[in-house]
Length: 425
Image (cartoon, rainbow, N blue to C red):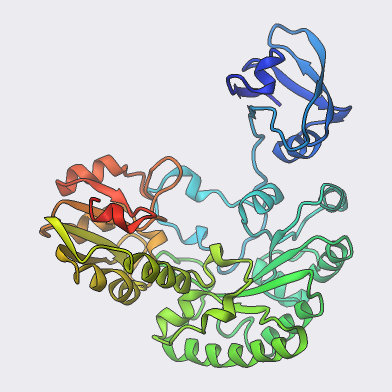
């Protein structure tokens, strides 16, 4: 693997490694990617096999604390693309004009282990499963959708997809923690099929730590794709009632709810969220389960510590999507407006890019936000949800934060972790 960057004064810098050198092996084991590097470099005694950029091959011996990083960034090989054609795949529903990376369908265990991306393991090799076990790549996030083999193959659009249960059993036997997900499609993998899936996965508790159920998302760009039914308000309410019963069953069996509905179910049906204790110990909060409850609790804690009045008047605008508007208004905007001198306005951005059926903030584009703010007196600054930009500060439509600020005419920023910063304190 090519070394792209060496941190100054790091171990790698001290032994003379430079960008452009290649790391071939660590302690005789070939380094294929970031997972190999992390695994093999965690030893105390290291022998690095290096191909220098001038073509010479050298061995470097290093003694370090096992927790110390070598201090170099490696050029990661291309990620594994998904070979499935899932009937509900959201990437197939993307319109044109988005940043290139959005159209890539990943099915890479590296991304699952490092970042919590879900993988189907539909075509995983025995050798790769052995690697997961040997390198202790735990937890791993698995898109199950259904445990019935024929139904799962239909959902994945892959007639040759492997049965998931033998794969999960192998991982469980090896002690690899598993977070599972079900994208629920009304009329396909719900009803008795869903109950079977939940029961099958529950048999693998506690190594299977969670079963997350998310509603299928349908954009306006489904021409030529499998005809799917949308999740309605009534359907969502029935699902909430059903899962509430299942959670109680799981608590009786395991002392743990195990099955979780993503936040969209409660928001789209205007149903109260479960009490906070339901989410205690939930391992998938960052994946859209319990995030709203966490947000409300966090805001309440911070707002109690804010001043009752500002020295200087301040007007701000907060952007949200349709689904979360009531939560943001209740938990943040209304309390801010109780502070003397503070004028907080909430603007709800409708998703014109994907279609009005897409109501989550993470799929808002720069164009959607600019349109929502057209003709609006934005005040001193506009704050956006934290999930609308990628790591390069680009919206899904490739618009930059700077471009949006120019269009709006005031600074546009991502909502900070500290509410005090919003007050200008």
